[in-house]
Length: 147
Image (cartoon, rainbow, N blue to C red; front, top):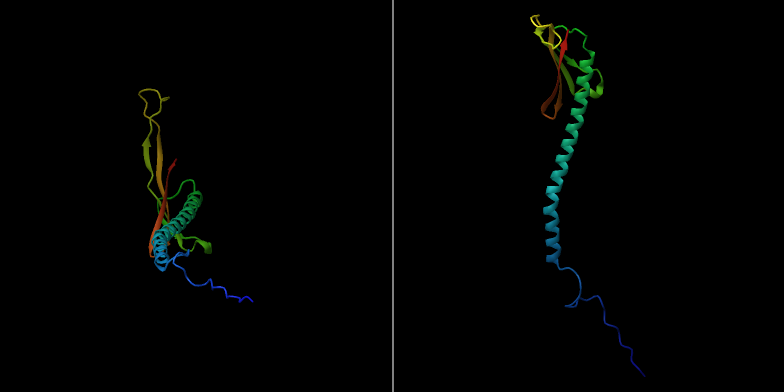
């Protein structure tokens, strides 16, 4: 008659068993944590740059719209205001139109001895200002009106 022997349990640790020690796990977690901090910083910088680019794109479009609304012969002086749309409540505008200056521009076709033709030129600046947190940012579009 044979006696059945109980099998040894396989759950106990043997000196040559495969696996990770606590020290190896802690080193791996430390390496991941050290690498993760700069990656998160880069991600935040990328988000900030994206938001600034979005605001700048809106400001450029608003400045171009304001420039297009100016009359053909604008009056000299400064004006300012806010945009009507609710989505642009952080944005405001300022328009500065310079005094008319007479400028003589010589041409190749003008006969010698004659005075070159003169033109009236005005310097125009449209500035869009917006709040970016506690700071204000601005974009200025410049042009010249020739009459």
